[in-house]
Image (cartoon, rainbow over all chains, first blue to last red; front, side):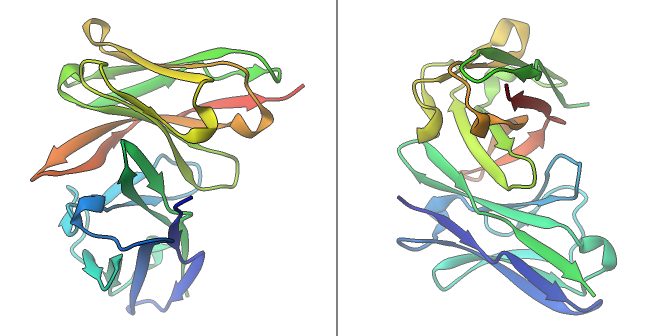
Length: 110
Length: 121
């Protein structure tokens, strides 16, 4: 059973740079995985951040960027701000019409 | 303005049934794959099911296969999730969402606000 892996929690200092990753328990993430990233704050619906590997959704600040690094998708925040403190999820296409979200990364800015 | 509005979430007993609805506005439903994503209390997002534009293809999370049915009525701009044989672990906020194809790759670009389903005796 394939699992999408994310760091459970990560912390960053205000103004710092942090990279969150999204991998597969078996295999590598590639463009055919259609990776995309979503931000969610408590009590709110998710917000689309990054798609098509590195395209920012409308209104997303340019401090957010996406990439594929090695065998994982990555979300980088450059110059983190306090209001970036959120949960971040990736979703990947697995196979045969099946998609899977990662377990999410709780980002703390302190 | 593009909007997805879910309804139908309630408290239901284990083994019971429920149908969630999602009304789309501001865009033509027929153009898009649609999906249900759920989030159990304090847990992460979980993809549940997808349905193709014309309803001809449907895909499900293994744990709901045979119990849940995703459907759509494009004329009514509506998406549905019929849930049978409900279990406590199906308790979650259920989000209706839209898949968009951009440069050959899919992503979710619109989310509803969610509707809460609680399965408990």
